[in-house]
Image 1 (tube, one colour):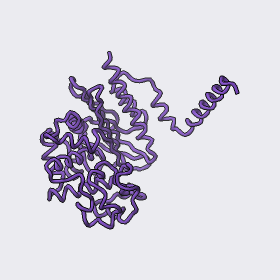
Image 2 (tube, rainbow, N blue to C red):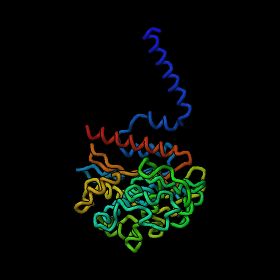
Image 3 (cartoon, one colour):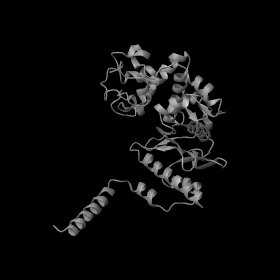
Image 4 (tube, rainbow, N blue to C red):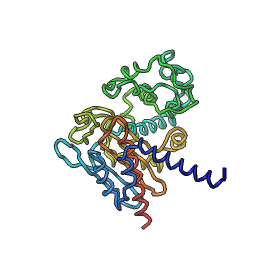
Length: 345
């Protein structure tokens, strides 16, 4: 067959395959991706509400400029309270960054060792967690342990566990997903154990250590361990598609403002958070950005080196199929493009 004809056929096949694949992509995502790019971040945040989010907060800290705050939609949909860019938000797994810094500081102080095993730290788990004698603290921090993820239990988010013991019961005696160190799988159980190890080493609740060693030096006065420490009127409401009620009274862990998360992330990335020797340890074990998800709340924290900018985005609507997660990532990328465009002007 002539080469030109072969190339034409391949192009046709590619086009047909591409068109066919669109049937499996929600048109809302396609629309959000192809719309003309707005000229400002606020316009993009407003547009996010048109895509179905109940409320959105964005915080941008560009070097050489005052931090900028953006919000659209509702802080509380039922009471028609407008979104407040300084509202508290459930930051979910962004909290792992704070945990990793706490581990780093204790390793630097020789109070923890990254090479000690889960069985060393929590001997009661030997024989109950497969490979406990081989899984190191380093592997747990890096999600390379192979331990099953307790939040993957069937219907977990319909009735989340409320204690360490309840969470542990969901994965005890389960087979490992892979051999320690041989693969990567994001796993909340790793940080369930890390928090237990921190508590045991400190002999008190580890958030007190985070408060003293991380929050206070950075003047982060709007970051809290849990819902129990805050006035719920200060918390942004959260909604899950198909669920009729506001989810802000569900306690899913740390709460913070976008500004506090942004200040923390700036200090994490520029190294001002660390004492001598700590930054090298942290860089060897964990990442410098994170996202979080719990029902009703999506959060993103990222530093963009080319802009020298920290960007925090909070979205108060989730769904079971994670369309809203994909949609929020499209919006996040568009915000970055807007900032890059404006920087080039």
